[in-house]
Length: 174
Image (cartoon, rainbow, N blue to C red; front, top):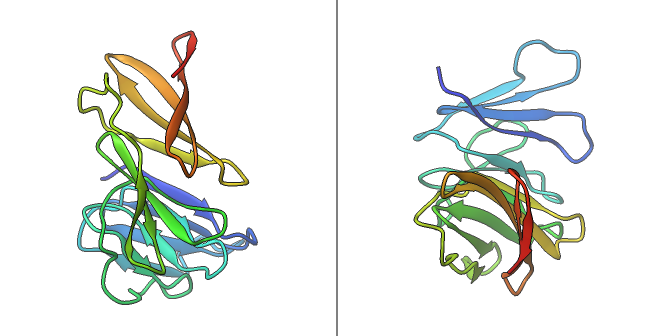
């Protein structure tokens, strides 16, 4: 059995989405069984629901675009990979973590808009958590670093690190 790799509510809160292993599910309120499921070509390691168009992005070896209702693919995968994933609040870009960097994929142009620099002390550690502030001007990434756990605060769209916060104690500006 695979661990749950991503959880999201639809913007109106009326549906819940989850991925575990190759399976993506959508549930409706009060229903114990999924209203829709999808078996992907690879493990889903995070998902997000587009804030205005409502489709679901599933991260992993490729990023799938699924119908929010049927969970059927909406064309080929996006031209990037990574997980976890998160949409910018305006829905124009999808952020995806790959190893120790985050890239912003511009959906209309089909290209990377910006990428975070590799932290000098990252040592190839994978980003395993990603969150955006409500306005989209700040991003948080989380990963283990040299055995401790830390969160990095980034300013967007410059992708400039602002602070590193250690869960095991202490903070530093970058």
